[in-house]
Image (cartoon, rainbow, N blue to C red; front, side, top):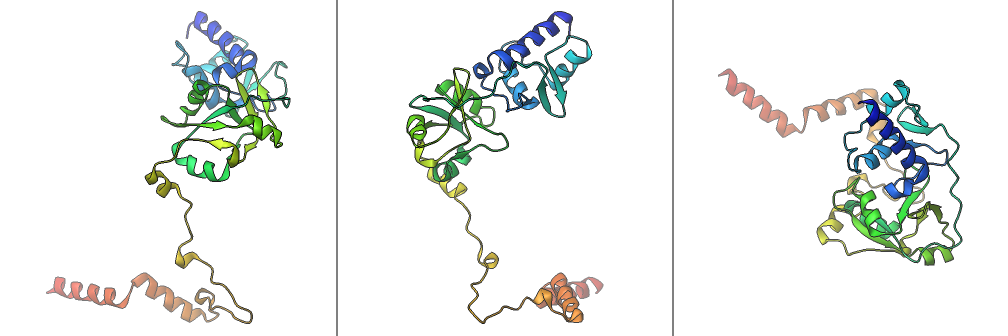
Length: 248
């Protein structure tokens, strides 16, 4: 990477991180940091920067271009103090948008949205921005409408990330609207019921259940283990017959 490109990339990263992260569909955590993966997703979507890799972020530091960040593990940590905390807003828009993976929608419709792995969940003012964020994890995400105003009046806290994004910790299912799911997807993603052999039998007062794996007689336990490894009796007999035929 030549000096001109390095300088341009340094300025661009500073703009993305500290001036308008919501424009690129990203938000920083409460300490002002962000994962390298999240930053690279945003950079690669911009014309002329699709080639940027983690190695380029390291080169800017090693070559002395003084970017306003340092790398710690898999995170980009700011050097400046320009990051401001996310304060609760007095009134969010009536409707916000979230792009969800199709296979997650059954769970979302039933249990709502929750931030996973990060302190907040990003909601967008426009469908276009929601799609941009959602396509980073799914090629064809579903756009969900969030009744933000109604949720806010019922106590859900919304925090502004610039002019285009709002952050929440969770959104209950009753405020989420989306297209009906295909029947095949419902069957695929429906919460699995425990199998019969995995279910715990109901114990009645005064009753108990034998656990053969806890038999105090060690010799009996060893015999059962041998039988399990060898398989059922008919299988053992079949193996003997095959051995006899081979020897003839």
